[in-house]
Image (cartoon, rainbow, N blue to C red; front, side, top):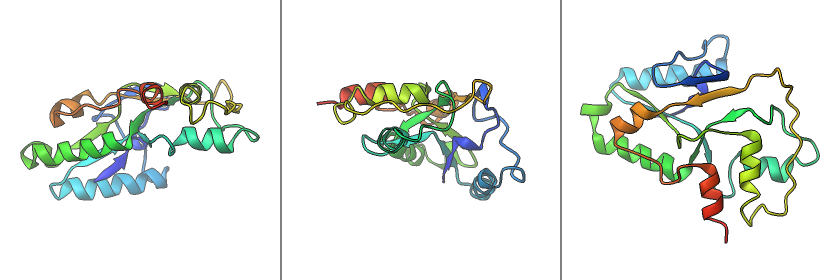
Length: 180
């Protein structure tokens, strides 16, 4: 079952891993639905992959922010932490879970990211390195300095258990390697 790392508590720069507490499902109904679904799947012997924010060259926060937010700005702090994962890496992590089989992954929850958290500003600065976004202006960030920063994902346990690692070790590396 694919889920989201957004279900974890921790929003002010804390590091979270597979054993970290999740948000209260009643106080956070959107994340609560994910947590309840995960529990059903894991309770029946399946596994859950909590994925970081997904992207490709033309899909993801960077695309929306650069193409749609130049006039309106971006909600959130420029230094707000964002954990990312390329769609291909998400697929390869799911395949890795299948390959290791139920002897390893039955009733487990994994945290999957590229292991290199960035910031909202970092996402935009990395994206404009790519020729696809080179002519875009980086939007204004509207978050207040006292707003929550986000959390850092540590998926080391998951990577080891699934014998998996990302093809794209960072969003910046992806953006610079795919620029033509």
